[in-house]
Image (cartoon, rainbow, N blue to C red; front, side):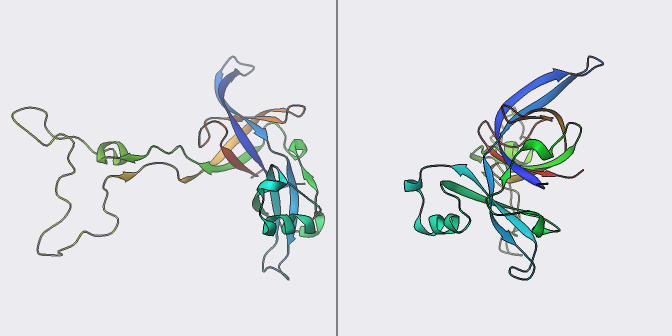
Length: 207
C-alpha cells in the first residue's frame, strides 16, 4: 500500500454534505506514478521508495535520467520524489501507484509551492501598518528606520523588509479526503491547498 502520491491541482469548488452544509474543496488529479528506486537502510542509510512522475518525451530527458529510469524498466518520466516507508520489501520496481490506497474520510498531509507574488513591500509582505496620510506626512508606505546608527552599525539578519513574497514550500497538515473518482483519477480534498492551477502537490497519508 503506497504511503502517498503526487497529484496536479485542478481548482476549487464546493460540495454539500448530508446536512446541507456547504464545504469548500480542492480538486486534484493523480499523476501517473511508478516506483523508480527502492532505498534501504543497508544501501542508503534509510528506508524509502523513490517515485517517478510527470511523463514526457524521452528526447527531452538527459542521459543520466534515462540511465536511472532504465535500471527500473521505466521511461519518459522527468520528476522524482520520495516517500519514507517502514518495510521497503513490500514494494517492487516499476510498481504503479494509484488512488486505490486512498478512501473517503482519510486524513492526509499536502505539500506544495505557494503562489509567488513577486517583490512586495512591508505592508503586503509582513502586514505592517502605514504611516499618516494627512498633515503633510510624506511617510505613507515607507519602511522607516531599520536600525541604530553607531551601534551596531549594521542591520541584524532577519530584519523584516521588502522582498520576495510567496513561492515557498507550504504544508497543509490536516486535510480530509471527501470524494474519489477512480475513473478520472480525481480526489476532492477539504479546504484550500498550496499553489495555483496545475501545481504539483505531494500527498502523504496520515491516517
